[in-house]
Image (cartoon, rainbow, N blue to C red; front, side):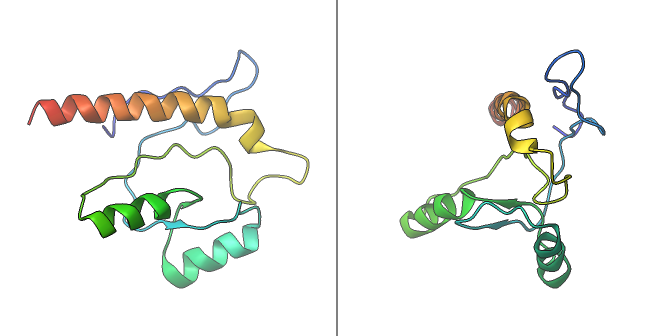
Length: 116
């Protein structure tokens, strides 16, 4: 999956730089807040070694753990968690690209499951 070609442009003039890519992270975090604070993002990365931050995965992990069901989280990040400019709104701009890339990654993952 690491070489999977992902969408990088919303249209002909609005593209991500650098281009999106598939990566594996060993430790992420989840919270009930939308993180839009670069200093806090840096703090949790430096203190706990976590990246990325999302708002949904912990609830999935909790229920799966309670029910004894294995799970995997596949995410497409849509914002910089405070790393953009004050005028930018990465989530509003890039959520459609993130959604498309999530679907691509999940479909590819399912294909690979079938081949094992």
